[in-house]
Length: 234
Image (cartoon, rainbow, N blue to C red):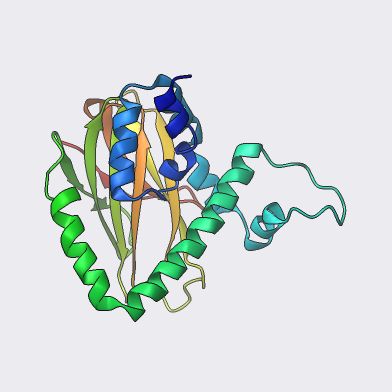
């Protein structure tokens, strides 16, 4: 294991969960182009967001509890436990950052003005924007940016649920999932989230499927498996 791999060895779960900053994500993706071990780790962890979305709050709390009391339960896989803990830390950090941003809005704007030219002004080579078509009666729109990388394709998804959704919407929203379908017809779940009226989900995902081999992207309802939206790259 070289020194470069040692530095990035623990970044895989944060990358899959979308917890890296834009600068860290670009740095890690540069490392993935030359490190097969980290590419394999990312591919193995790719289903993790979907697994986390299926956890009930009670089960998540149980996984986070390190105590020895109570009846013994089947031990979760180490990588799942690590991902749950990482997600909990990430959410706490995000809440803290949000409070700081509200308290110091002017400072946040200044920081953004500095960061945008450095990190976001360049269009990644080969980037393709895909607009999804609705195939079911749901007030949802979505677009995705697909970027070819050495290990496959990076996908940045924006999915918006209109504000005039059903009045009986669940408190925590409906569970949705993003799937990639290759030209052989094989589909793989990449990420999942909960959609609520008036909200936009912004997800970062990755797949080992090359951009040229992606036949379509699908947004499905996890509860039923129904395809709600389809995006087809050119």
